[in-house]
Image 1 (cartoon, rainbow, N blue to C red):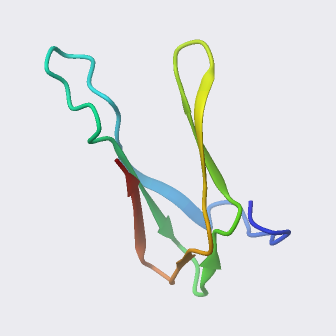
Image 2: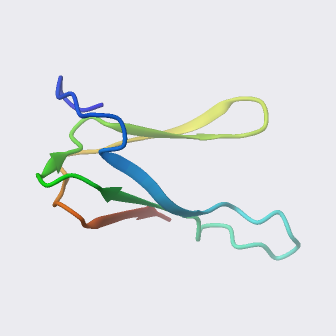
Length: 79
């Protein structure tokens, strides 16, 4: 969660995601995850984090800077 802010469960949900394809010629570098703010107010994601895992460990952590998701809007994180 953010800097001490508490939000009810379901306030920010993962709406869609596209994982890395293991197929030959996969889509490396085109993975993404989409978050949605389901509340009626802004949600600041400062210091929230997302981790990428392999089959045996967590390998990459992304921590948000000062990013706000407005009510009912989407935020896509990818690369």
